[in-house]
Image 1: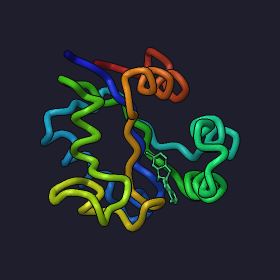
Image 2: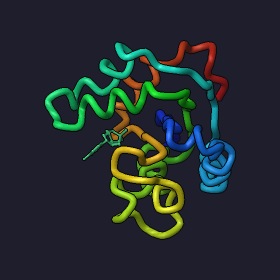
Image 3: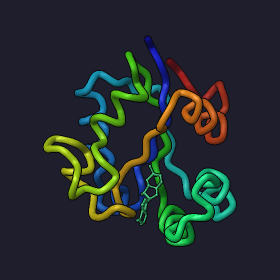
Length: 139
Ligand code: CMP
């Protein structure tokens, strides 16, 4: 079914001017970028977004990284968008990511892994609401 997912182009990628190359991979896969904005998150925004990871050993590092530089927030739309985007992102650890995936091409490490994508339609809905208002999305 036609779905929406939430995507972030992370600081390691914006810093290296990879937004356009990552968007090309997204669009070639048939996903439509129906909303996009470049922002810098506050610490509070990053902590709220990643609340489910707050007990993890890497939480502080994750929040510091995600607030270190601007990021690009996106809503992607298409057939099975959640699963399709996870497929083209590749595994969290670039060493395990398949050839042709965004993380295989661009990620530097498990933390600096270039992109985020929602893990379910429920997460997508939460993450989109947290970062966009309805009129910013033009499907
Ligand atoms: P993301 O999909 O944005 O959601 C949680 C993030 O935690 C994940 O991508 C990784 O970037 C990050 N992460 C997972 N494991 C580690 C780790 N071992 N060290 C640092 N960051 C991690």
